[in-house]
Image (cartoon, rainbow, N blue to C red; front, top):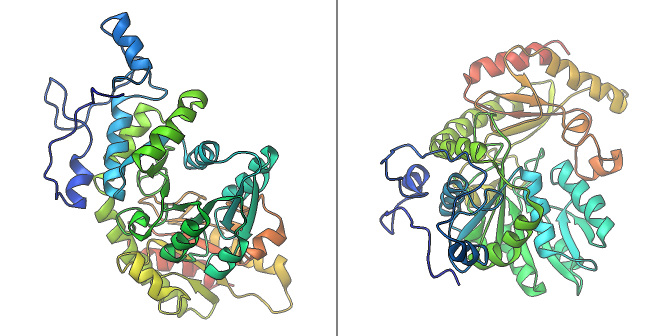
Length: 411
């Protein structure tokens, strides 16, 4: 099986992350291009029928059909796998399709999943509603209490799923502790690394089996395309995920793969710059009298600050959430009105639920990213009507402070 392999880029075995981010992928074509080529083709011509048969039977590694094999997509997959310290990667059409592929590849009717209740709203819907239609049960537990994960384990538990940090509360899970629980249960541990990216955090180093990405966010970095990926061992990717991809086709387009591939080249320097701005903004928000609470792992006031600094290369990331103060007798409606007022007064921040862009974005999670959840589910995840999420970009942080003050100062 696979005696013939697609060649790899010749790099030193000890090449560091920033070098891998600009050079890992495929060797250049016969034309010797320095910037990676974009292969916009749906299929690939085979030299003869026997070779085509061998390649379709997976006896020879080659490019066949872009639903599951394409040079540009493979360049992105190899580069992201290298950055995450994983053996392999499979790219998908979006971050949510990556989680769909995860479930379709690993789970069956009668299986049980343990998931943080603080994850992205669509992830809660996928596990709690869509997978449930096919007989997969999910228990939602506290992001930050490993004992609660342990108590939720059942004989049929097959998967533990977490984000770290979470969207939007920036809660941090102890990946190593969860990996011990997963191993004891004979289950896989999957960690969504969207907020940190491998520039700040590599979950596999702490025992995660699978790393999930929405490439739409920091991997692209400029809000241009939709993309997703799973990073894991070669065995998991080839035996569990590739067969589903060949059948179901939640494929990443070559163009989108190329855009994210080029985004990876600046990932490290973007994350450093945006995280530094986010820390400055978070500290400033803590000092504002109109702000009730700030959620940011880089602040010492964050409940998991020390854990975050250990897991995230000493960085808090680029996402800051905060709750605006409102009259004590105003209730949820008044809190929502106050949050909307702050958002609507901005002139620099982009009002959009996307994050990871070079442009700073601002949103009201309770009515956007988590709008499809019930109020009980939102409150269980700690998301109140007065909460605002800011994904800090490369704008001047003083301009972002002034932008938020337009609303905060007139509450």
